[in-house]
Image (tube, rainbow, N blue to C red; front, side, top):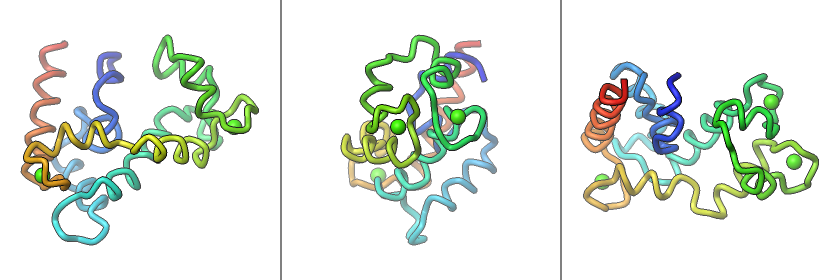
Length: 143
Ligand SMILES: [Ca+2]
Ligand SMILES: [Ca+2]
Ligand SMILES: [Ca+2]
């Protein structure tokens, strides 16, 4: 993964990765669409996106993210941001901690709003595709 990709929106990284094939994106979309209404709500996006985001940082897959792991994924990761998520202060962020903090901030709300271009509170497949295409362009431009 190229470094610029790390700064793409969390939703993109988590759900609609720019390096995934369209096939994978569609699978992800379907997987995220828990109630199968053909649209993604913020709740659905958080449910699928937050664990994926977490797993991306948990490099050794032991169920918690250390500051070292966070910095390996995102060099210069702010230790304050880390401390804010490490609710019990043991130097590790578990998924439960990260989810709790993320949801208290609205989860992937900001990233969601970027994809929900008509602002109806749902991401439909067309909006998801537009977003993916945009990311593809960005990643091509950055190469
Ligand atoms: Ca870990
Ligand atoms: Ca902790
Ligand atoms: Ca929409």
